[in-house]
Each structure stands twice: as structure tokens, then as C-alpha cells.
Amino acid sequence: MFTGIVEEIGRVASADRREGLLVARVIAGRVLDGLERGGSIAVDGCCLTAVDVDGEGFTCELTAETLGRTAFAERLRPGARVNLERPMRADGRFDGHIVQGHVDGVVRGRSRQADGAELEVTLPAGLERYVVEKGSIAVDGVSLTVAGVSPGVFRAALIPYTLEHTNLGQARVGGPVNLEVDVIAKYVERLLGAARR
Image (tube, rainbow, N blue to C red; front, top):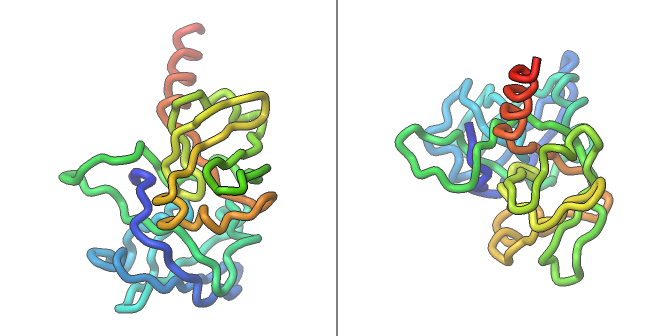
């Protein structure tokens, strides 16, 4: 489990196809502390397994399933900047919100104000019901508060700290981002549906 509080921005050193997998090497620093081979790491909000770890970075293997459900097929290229977060420790502080690292959909940023203070994102119809004003949402692994919702769109305010310490500061209009809606909303829907039967 993650919290959506990005620890650092890593840099993709390589992304090569090998035996049906995309093998990506990410250069990082801070997140390597305590990250062991076989450990989980959130890369742009997607929980991946570090199959190799050394003093300069880690390597992940992405299957066709992962590539088909994330923005990685389009964005995971050498030189790309990615948001990184280690799993939450059971004895740690809980900032942000519950983020599983299970991407619900790839969405497109529709617009961003000139000063970068607001991001507007198109929502797929199947996810729209899970997004509420003042609720939580993860965009590329960044925990954000929904500032407003209208049909097929939500808006999130971005403070200067977020723009500086995540890759959302470089997000381009129309570019794909990984989206994870609030898992609590999905559980509530499931439980209410079962209760009505």
C-alpha cells in the first residue's frame, strides 16, 4: 500500500523489450534505502516489483497486461522522469490517502492553467462515479484533492511544491497519465450493491 506522497523523481535510464517483457531501469537515490530485490515500488502510481537493485537504481519487468492498463507503453522511454514512492511502513505516518498502486485507467490531461495551478483531467465514464469534490484521487501516483467535478471531467489544484517535487510540473496537455480512484468508494459501491440484493 502507498499514500500518494512522492518521495523522489527518478529517471528512466533504459526501457528494452526482452522475451515479451518491457525491462526498465530507473535511476534513483532516496527510494533505494530499504528497497530490496523483489520489493514493491510505485512508479508513476503503478506498483511494480524491483527485480534488481543496486546503488544507483532498480530494474522492473513490465508485462503486456501492465503496459495495456497504464500509460507506460507511451511514456516509459529513456530520459523520462517518473514519480517514485516506497510502500508505506506499518509504523509510519499516513499522509496522502490509500493508494494501492493498481491503475484504474489511463486518462488525458485536458488543460492546465498558465500558472500551472490547476490540472483538468478527462474521466472515463466507468470511473466518473468514484470521483467526488473534495475527495482523493491519484494522478501518476500523486495524491490530489479533487477541486471540482463536472460531467466527464475533474479538476485538481496543484501547489508549487507538488509541481516542483513531482513530474506533474512537466505534464503536457493531452498527455496520458495513470489514474487511480479512491478504493474506499469502490468498496462502498460493492457493499451497497450486495446489500440491495
